[in-house]
Image 1 (cartoon, rainbow, N blue to C red):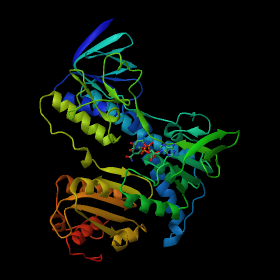
Image 2 (image 1 turned 135 degrees about the vertical axis):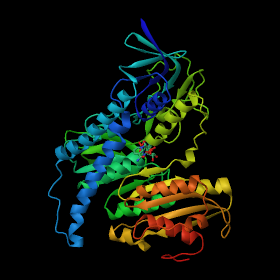
Image 3 (image 1 turned 180 degrees about the vertical axis):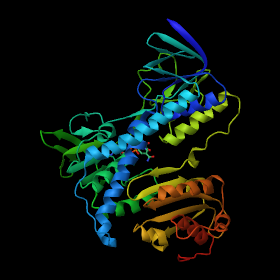
Image 4 (image 1 turned 45 degrees about the vertical axis):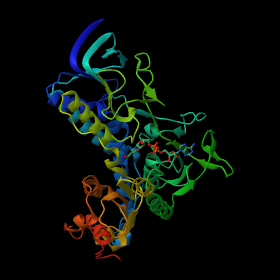
Length: 460
Ligand code: NAI
């Protein structure tokens, strides 16, 4: 076996792995990045980017369908999935090329092949051993299914759902979490009949209950059926349909069943257990500085328990590179990570839910600002609301600890919400800042005016 020694060996070239590689190279480290598929990982090739391209195509379809309502005579005469896929693949391809260029410009050695982690700080690929002073594990996650539910044919995960060559007429989406509601939204906009089956009592159950209620109402208006609190009993495929059975409920027949019940960390088959790496329910165990139980070995991204978000992966990758370089970066506060679900309407939040805020702070105050009072939202013909959660009793000056938003394009507002929560601003402080009129952003400003006791286009 031949060998190469560098400062840092990274296993996995997704969001966490490549961000770590880019930052480490910037800091002067020699880096080997091992990737068995394509640089960019799930986010770029099978996740964030292609799904958001589909969601944009869905938005265009909705706009064309609704044009008549504002005097623009338009209609959707069909969805050409070949065209949609070409657009989506074009976006991914351009970003992929850009990423490859960045990585090569920083002299990162990319090794293409399946890497096996071998203790203490080495990765083997096709008989070649890459030894690092440090190793970062960043092998990501994969769509999971249920024990008796085999993926194949009409039963798909998001991986296959991204490459369909036609729009199914009827779809059942199993799981009303982030992936479930995003695909439900796309297919409905493309004209399908959609039923979402969720085991818990509400859609997007990780969000504040306010957001679930708003989204469920909007989905009802869009004629997306939601079966919440439903127990999945099985699915049977025949030649031309798949029949989904729910306990105590009627069967639902569809052309396609999307299984979106969560993603599992890719922690088996990579040599982790043999190397003595500690895991917990499949997640690599790390401390707050993302150090594993093995000296010199870190883990980042979906492999590590917590929100499975690309931007968390980027932040963790950068954190680890800086930590190894001795820059002593501050520990990442996961409650401060913004979350956006890009269905129509969008759901965006940062900080604590009302339940979490009560647990942590005892007395709290909440305020809900309806987008009905926001001019730009009316122009866009969207409905929804913003909910603020403040620590401390009503009438006291406490920091805003949670912002929850539902409405078209509210994902773009989460940047300001994130600064408010992470800089522990009070409503009074935010109310001092002038928001441009007419923007949707202004709704966030007005919500804070109202919480500070001086509402403009809202009731006190
Ligand atoms: P998820 O955990 O968000 O949702 C899975 C849902 O399936 C849960 O609501 C769960 O209660 C439900 N479920 C589980 N077993 C079930 C059963 N037997 N019957 C009915 N429902 C069942 O996971 P999801 O949507 O698969 O996404 C995976 C990860 O990817 C998440 O962590 C998500 O945050 C991330 N992601 C983020 C996106 C974004 O930031 N916009 C987009 C897509 C995914």
